[in-house]
Image 1 (cartoon, one colour):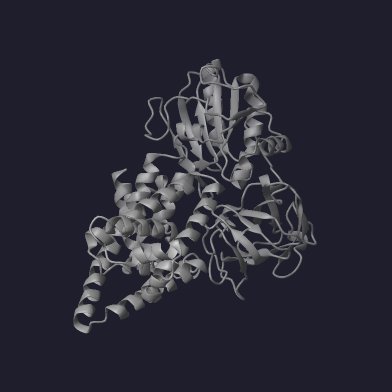
Image 2 (tube, helix red, strand yellow):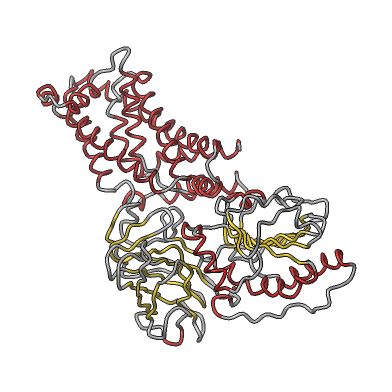
Length: 586
């Protein structure tokens, strides 16, 4: 925790090097000519506290938090617009009698004893509502962990440390700026011009925030060196396995074996409590006590995860072969996207996938946290005494996993299971990935974890925006086309004819999609290098590239039959309302 606090604080300090800090600088410097203890310090304290509070709520809350903060931003912009005008035209403030203008006039005045600190703190709160820092590696680590681990004091403290770091770097700039402005006033007698310059700067800052420059163009201009430095700090201070609070294993799976005594600090030694399940499918609620005497395999999965889908045929085959010998398999469905929390969606997926073993819905991540799990898929092998003996993360090594099952059953039954090992030839989306040919990574469309986004101007986070694709895309770059609203985990198309473009290198391309919010299907058209996919179409579209989004799930759109090469994928939606979440490859 100490390492993470230091890391968060350093990440906040580094924001001074990012263009995303520029829109709030005028609001901070507007009071740089006032005493720091009664003006600058309360302002920065209000900014840090408000940012930490709003970011903590947004990381673990729902859309209502985002909407509430949007109203707060509007109010803050209005306040600063009045503040800027009173700096620019002090005589105007004296003539106008409206309450908001009088408030702006008081806020722009000198800091008298007993009142200046409070007024500066109010301005700090407004600044905290407006500030949207670039989500670099350090802030991304904090926010992703918060979203997956749930509300906690730890989340708030880390975000407060990040904001305190930013306030520290701004303090240095503010103290330096204050000396410059005081020197100008003494040598030139130019106080009125300083006030007007500050007024123009404040109004320019209001315009930048109002038009989304702080979350669009300035985010794209974020210094690459800063991001690289942050990433190196993350890798040094936090082990890789702790960075990825939740990840799908597209790379070579990390296979680990435990002795009965347990040699891993993260994996529990015994089967944890399962009472955190929010619902059970194919079974009555199961408990660790009721499973004593059985060999248990826990499979953490989620139904739109391609890696999970490719492991399902093996898990289903193991259950069919060994359930009569004392094997129980429990699929712990821990959602990644909001639509995967819907019980009706999960029940439909379980039915269509032919899963007949027990499935525990883990919408609150309570079972996930009890196992200290970080992966989809993840498999834990428990013996008849309730001890976690083996575990495996990711796809692959199915023969070894089945050997563990057979070994635990032999211990339980005092004889080897009679059946031979499973031989599997899965098809469709469940077919094994051609790992050696995959050069494209899983790519999220929501801005909080998006990488390699190439639409000019970047994201206009949480706001409608018309996007276009550049004339050329490099390998693994992607873009939105048309009018979309891109949010933290999801992008929603607002007008017909929009789509997505991706230059990829893999046999298979999948896209996690959902219909309109009221469940209406959306037709689409897919092309490869500008032409219908033909024989290279996936299961969810035809050779002509046409298909329909009917449910929230993973859609297999491309399966190349004639060799893998760089291809330009484009999907166009013929109606508005489609929801897009992530690309995956195989």
